[in-house]
Image (cartoon, rainbow, N blue to C red):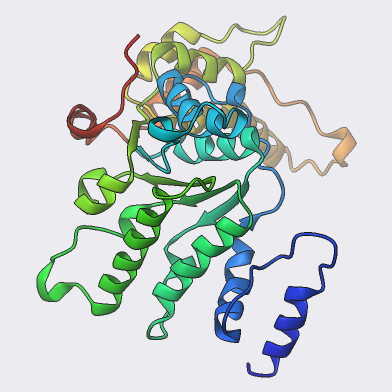
Length: 331
């Protein structure tokens, strides 16, 4: 490992005439940690547009005013109106929290750090908090940047759990809180965008630093219809897709559940075709394969019966958390 350090130092300074990949670090160890974290930088734009996310208008508006507008029009966001540096996306699983984060990165063209617990947790003593420190230094170096902490409850749950909480975990949480606190005291365009399905398990100190808390709810009827129309488009000359039935029966389904319903419905005619091919033992070249049939009402019914909603169990808890801590737009 020691033999790599001179090469890393060389790598840090070869970018003559342009911004270096890494900031200046005091030790080769910190530079090595920075190299490992740089793998979590999404170097290609996620290419997720606001239009590709159906519904969630309130969440989009809040994200735009919290992240997009301060980057586009920094003149207005100074003093008391300095941008929010910490944003929490919470809600049932499969509702589009990660998609919203990618849309922010696409819209703002920021350096996007896609961070999970495995990115900042190390088995070596002291390395976890160093990784957190290096992460924020990298984000400042590449600003404007967005640090996306997916499933943040796995990183910083409630502290004070007695003997069940390991010392290394406490040090990691403390360093993350210190680094986030430092962001609010500077004009640097570094945003922390966190997502969780269990917001009530977050530590109170982290909630304070995540100033904007945005509920990403289950899709409304209009959003459900838009999803079904996109995933199961009507084909002229074939049986019309019963969108009204789908929208009504899919109440309580997340966006991910709706996609599974559509996939299951599309599989029904393919299953019938596969049975036919197997019964007749036909061996055909790819260009000679028969066409898959159209999706009928019976296929829709089977898909709805076999695909159950997975995200409705804690709906009331999300609503209560939103009332107690959430951000809203009142116009």
